[in-house]
Image 1 (cartoon, protein in one colour):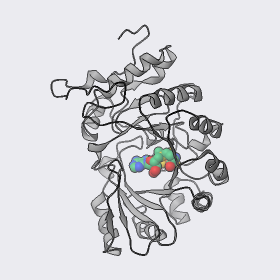
Image 2: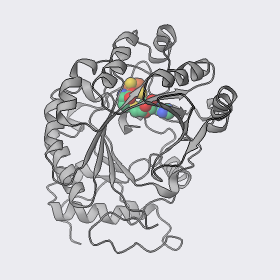
Image 3: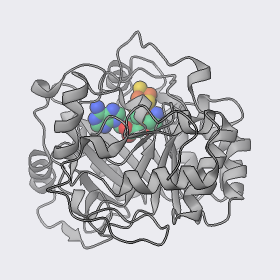
Image 4: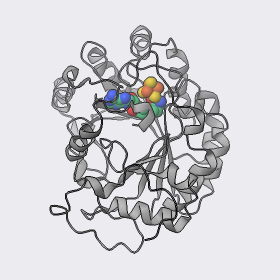
Length: 356
Ligand code: SAM
Ligand code: SF4
């Protein structure tokens, strides 16, 4: 492959021990990694900015990336089009908070029009989302993931550092009202909201949504690994204590959550072992951060600078070739990715830049 422009800052092959790596699978231009995992799901962070300051995600005084360092909508649409040509079928719009970015609804309509993209999902904190529900429904958004760490206004305030619970609660009801499939995400944290596990799970009796409890992960702009004490086993114990007969639901192998049905409940509960990383073997997802870095694992620190490629004038053939090359040197799992990332940086990025 020839390159007439500057190489990306980090190119994946350098990190990789080729002697140990399996051979890349011939893919015919489709995204299949060196472990034979087909990639069909792209998570796109459209901004790193946010109207909340969840303490597990970012410090109170967050230094956001200058706007010119964030991918423009045109750049993102070009990347999504290339990705769709390479087999991406599902896209999640995330951030930061997607709805703080100006003109986001126009962008969503444009993504909807891209050939090959079959599903668009959104992750939001719900502060600005309720009034947008009719239009989101008209666009055909396939599901909404709403982050609510507590249904108690004061605890919500303490966790997010903002007093916006009522707006978020409105979004919860509005998503259901508009019949858009809803998942609620709650990060479980020692001393903050472990008392909320059962009240949140209890909401699934009346309302048909997936309640998902997430292990806290080390992505808050500091090194918080030592403080992470709640894992999936502990969360499961709490749920089983209250619902001893709940039944595991056998589902999609790509799902990061293990879900359970509770007798008499309209919704389900689930656990995402994001820190224990129990799901890497079937991972079908890649990420593009707000700054335009391609991540082939949540725990890597960016393995291809797509923004640099685009702004240096790369044509689509070159962009595709660089992406394929990167996918062909993917980390086996989140542990391998993190080990490598920590040789490059001491602290992993805030989740707001990555997109969760
Ligand atoms: N602002 C939107 C929201 O909060 O839903 C979208 C972006 S947010 C970064 C995406 C998801 O990442 C949220 O569900 C949030 O709870 C989760 N998240 C953020 N920091 C996390 C951390 N340190 N550990 C686990 N999950 C985290
Ligand atoms: Fe904002 Fe979402 Fe991070 Fe909370 S988790 S600070 S809502 S980006």
